[in-house]
Image (cartoon, rainbow, N blue to C red; front, side, top):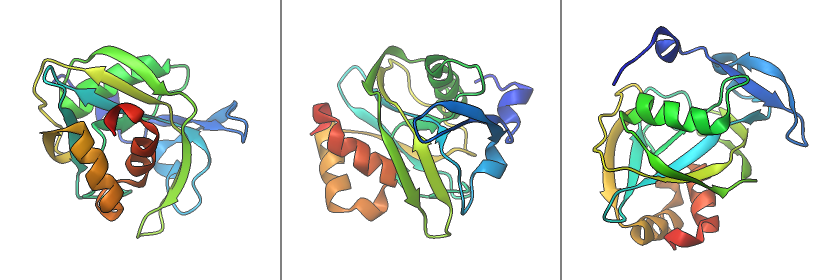
Length: 181
């Protein structure tokens, strides 16, 4: 994994959106996430291996929102003027040390708002992608505490039965991702 100064920089800019999903400005990632998080652009990605197993990750314990919960393979925020697909590839490399292929948009209009136990809010328009890899993760410990390759149907069932153990966006996304049920 190759980290650049901008990847290590925690205070990336994110794209703020109006209620219709139109970009209206930018804010620092750190300043934008808190008890009154403005609507902004993000993405989620689910990565499958050659055997059809789904990579799920447990968020690092020092993450600002939902620390220590299991979630989809990885998430992120496009930078201003950065195409979402470019951000997906950038974050796959940064968070997981993975090269991904066959990236497909699965839920283009996914949107959610959720509040964690500390009162931090996520408020995102968050297109969801599904991708493939032939590699093994080499996760950044600042992002990922642990990972597992699992049967997608078993993951969807576990998220439905024990939603508190998973990120709320993952639970909502899995309800809509028919390929994993």
